[in-house]
Length: 226
Image: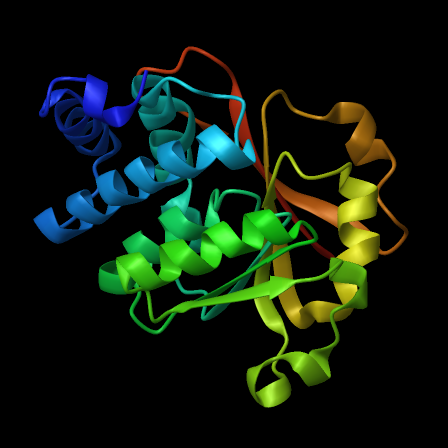
């Protein structure tokens, strides 16, 4: 099934209902960009296998609404890095939201797989997202000198990328001294939390309620110890 196989308004209605349930105030142009991103993801997914979710209606809940449920956690951040960005989740969704809600926010996305960053680059161009930067590299090899103005990130995030220990160890050189991590997880990763690197702590575990998705989702906020 593709986007074009569904009734024209089916996906839009599901997305609008979910956004309303989340209490987000998105402009019609942002709704359109989210659906355009979904269509692009569905198209590229046929060839490049960007996501295991094939049904566009499921993509609305599992990808769009799942990422939208987390966006307000980034309020106030100016420089965000999405590690292991894959098909752009949550990075692309965050960028579409931030363009209106947090216009000073810049979102960088990094992945090692060229076909994925090629998709992200195409999505950035088609959706006209001037607040997005794409890197093709291993995050542990990305250096501050390669970043605009050599500025570290306020927030580093990931969605089902790696164990928390590895996530921190591979990317902490890119995090501002007073910055923090936001890891998107399903169940609370109790064992991973026990294995956090020395000098790091979990500041908050925030449950997420994703409309139309009956699974547990949590944000894990992590920061350096004082």
